[in-house]
Image (cartoon, rainbow, N blue to C red; front, side, top):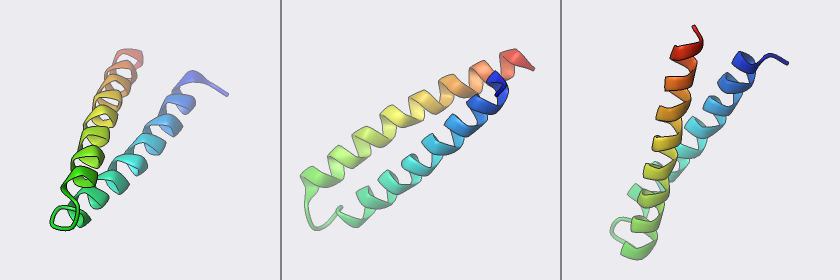
Length: 61
């Protein structure tokens, strides 16, 4: 499998996790602040990874 395909699959995986964590953060906003903050923090870390993958993808093309 080529590296470009691997990067695209990894990017899709990260974007799915990111959306789930953002939804979880919004769901717990009024119920449990600690869970909401943790989900938001994890989503930010995943967004950083997505940005790195985008940078690599742009440099390959």
